[in-house]
Length: 343
Image (cartoon, rainbow, N blue to C red; front, side):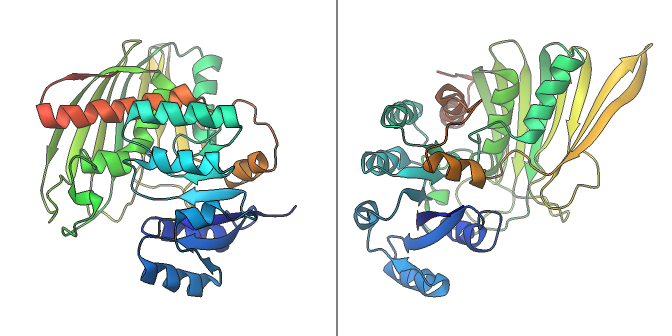
């Protein structure tokens, strides 16, 4: 089947997407047609490296009738306005988490995209429920685990960053930086499992970073159904692991572990284990390894939608916005030091 042409706008994080499309898992579904960035030298560099077109600006990208799709990898604050320009120009949009800090702006542009029949796909939450979350929901129903009660969610990396004047240095545009940059995957997973949130609290510190934003943080969340969760995200852990995205989810009648052991599956896969009580004793009921996990781009799904195919069980706009609402409340909590409601 013919690949879908796409231009990548924003070559900071977007430069990683180039490899995903050219030689990675996106290569069978998308064709890189060109690149665009505010930095003209960067555009020339990556256009030469990839043998694709160098676009002068977003307007030129959107005016290209050969492009049905655009990858927007600009900073998140205000990205909804760029997405709006793209969908009004008839383009489908591939972007990254979190695509906006303003929950109302996010809701508005997603509603407009729906009216215009244009896709806006992210890696988190993915356009369809990823395999690890499908498995968790299956176990919850099949084994009658009951309501989710609590969760500890962790992600860490080893960064030693210096201030560079980018949006990563600005607490208004990058609130509670480790959670905003890494923990959003976990927040979206939690929304998928627990439903909408009602309140958040934040703690953070600066241990090694040269940036004015924190590099060690945790976010506590209370959900409407009564569940409680904690997200720990850090740039300060040097143990050779990167981006584990582990979960321990306690239900009324069992506990599910994702990527919690000292070993982890290769290639970005997920390991899931279900623990339940039998005759009062702890028992491993099931354990599975999955190739697809939360946070992966669903390249084939995006290509199908661009070609006009309809998705079943598509992630709703409300679920996408629910994760952004947590982030918006988190930003307020960082400034106030108090518990903030999720609106």
